[in-house]
Image (tube, rainbow, N blue to C red; front, side):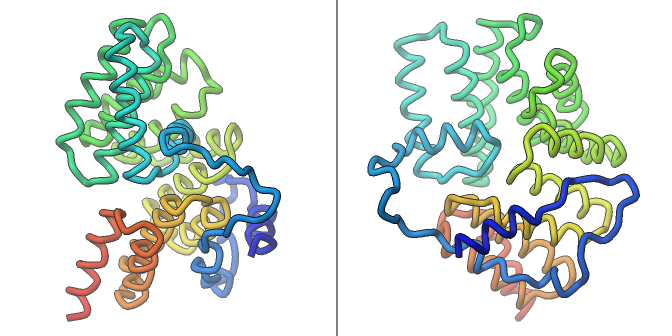
Length: 286
């Protein structure tokens, strides 16, 4: 299985929209995601001390990847305790705000948005945008996008890009903002830049999103195959399966979509988006 995952990653082409072609034939699009998404068991020689939950969540949030609800809760509790004792740590406030935002997505609960905004604004009070508080600015852009305020999301993302063009975390924000505003050429350029600066799971997921928005569903499916090869944690694997289910549902294949949603829930039972997809697929199947 490790060999298959490695081959999938090695075979992944660079993301480009210039002279775009269908990435592979339809037969390749039916590669079994389930095989790529099996959690690898521990092997001799692995690090004997696995990362703590808050470390896993901090790493995932920092990389723009899905984190588990339990790990996020641990990170939030840790950062809340830290800022209570160190209220002028702007970096900790930015991490806390981003963790609140990810928790809102994971739980499908916008009640977390005000907490995220408060933490991010506190970070910006301590270190304003003009002094380069990139993490807090990025968080504010992601929060605006989550609320459907894509114009504000674009402003924050472009501000980060203007100050630090190689700050990769600005580009997922810009992809979402431009897509939400219907500016697909700009979204394509942003995802190309993301793939050059930081290839991997987030780039593949955003590429799939842009392809899907343009109606290029076969290409979107192939981008998800590459995301499957890059996914490592159960939360990441579950999110890829959920996205695969969404594509299948849109193609009018509710039974196949249901299989992907249920696979996502087996990998991560707290995957709220997959739970909603499963309910919709079951309703569609009568």
